[in-house]
Image 1 (cartoon, helix red, strand yellow):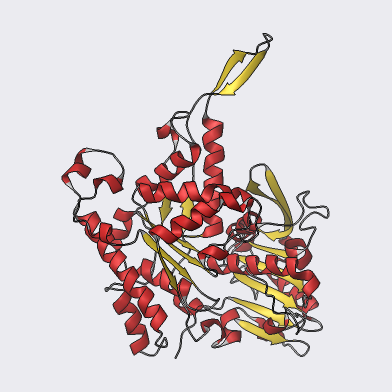
Image 2: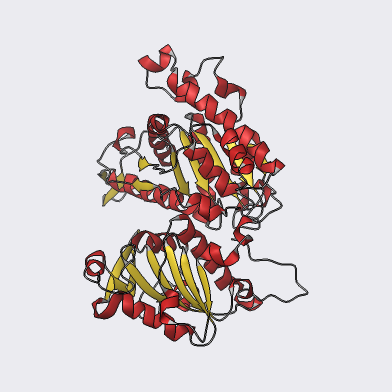
Length: 470
């Protein structure tokens, strides 16, 4: 039986990432980059043999591009493990950058500093990334500080740490030319982006980032300096993306400041196109979601949660009301309004949610197998132009940081009223793609109602070749 990417990844729980408040100081004021990559699945061999085993046993199809990418990742895996197990004498006696400590015969010096895997959606990029992480021996994962994150989640953490670093710097009182009191920040021992990169590199020798996609100018302006510093400090970086490097942030604001990142990727990483002929998401489209159930005629027992299922999609007339029934069975009279902190002073007010404590008291419900807290939102609140603005938040349309916050707070999310999206609603479609991608990567369960089945949600004119890119 062929396995979809979601089935292969299901055994790998989400990465845990925590940050803490920063004490005042210079370079040392940043705390360790706390993270832990945990996998219930461990392959006793490296990625290339593990991938071949999946092909031999019939769970994956043979694909030359995947095999080529696996060979490069296998070489990186071997070199990084060797480097960790045989530190140079200089590394034992100094705290200088890891890259400066590598001997002339270090295997890492003979290889690219990482990999950039790109290709169409469903080609197996994320599967390769997860297989790469899960084939590191458990002892090496801890020693290397192996970290695997969604790109949006990583950048949200970067901005948070930059903000905390700035807030930790003491203010110095002085006088203006006119004798008036003025306040300024004390100088840091380096550029803030470099300091954050150094703090990450101290604890993270292998950094894996899934779904690199740049739409935020704040991200675009710092990526070159951030990843240049990480590579300089000796961190091996593996990206996945749906676009080749030159297509990233295309036509974006101030793109000239983003181009150094593109050149960095092309020069220091192995850029590999993963062009699998099979889209594993569509091997069994309904199974990839969980269940797609057509209305009307849906029996109450049809929409029960099942083991390993990623979600339920109710389709057609009556699906809106049916999802209301499912929510009522989940939350009952215990639903409350909640305030969700996104960071940087931004707060979302969730109108209907079930907290962890409330969920425990619903143990006798037919939908009691909720994976923790849950929330009910309408499509327009999550993906619409006004976002959560109508009486809930003053911030307008939601962005990736908001969706990461929702996914982190609610392992089970109900989305009501997904329409058949027209070409004029392509911005809403992009937000929907970002939402689904975030929920998928963070192992959240989605239960939704829609006007059409998955292939019918995006209805573009036949004479246009434009596509909504995630």
